[in-house]
Image 1 (tube, rainbow, N blue to C red):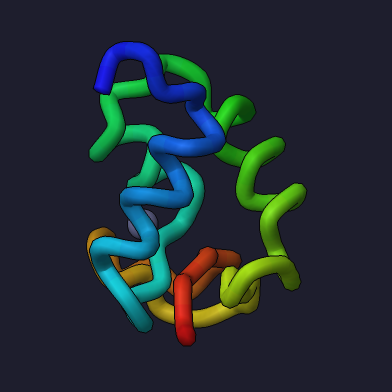
Image 2: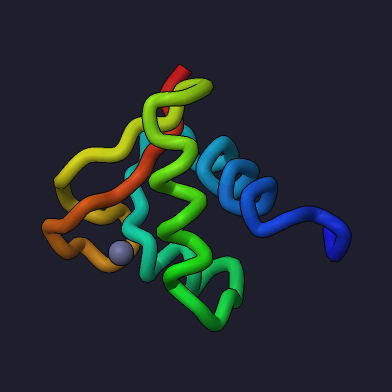
Length: 73
Ligand SMILES: [Zn+2]
């Protein structure tokens, strides 16, 4: 687990929570990352690839209406 890149950790996190959208802040919090920007660069990069979708809506965790990313197959 320690050897996984931030990108892999974000992708695994979302895959394990299929169809649940999470905002960048909540992903950063759940993965204990200090910088939300780390998550943002990953979610921007993976959006539209391999089943990852970025759209505005209610975050599954914090419930705020903002941009979040989810995995859907
Ligand atoms: Zn959130």
